[in-house]
Length: 108
Image (tube, rainbow, N blue to C red; front, side, top):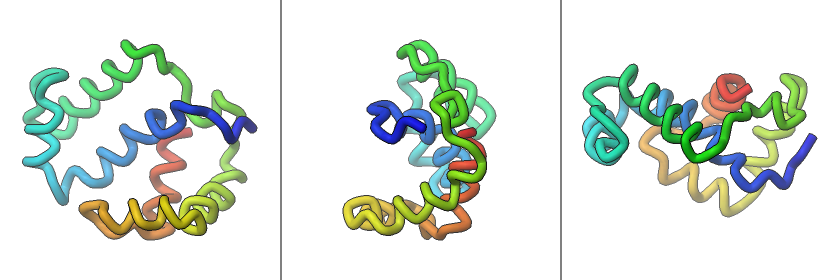
């Protein structure tokens, strides 16, 4: 496992976008429009993944050594880290442990 991966958050970005899209689709469509046409979630996901790959990030969490069994640890780390907990409170949807589990699972 490599816990000090600088671009780890980039790996999580597509899953977060997929989960928050229903709550803030108009904002995401406008915000992400510079990377391509963003009229629906399918286009947004394609563009975001393409942009991330263009920036040189091709890995998933599993490529970095994380396994499904690590998801509980990652969820607890996220919730127990005060600065991350504050950021979750700013999300357009409530950052529950179940949401975090889904994001980490999708990012594997």
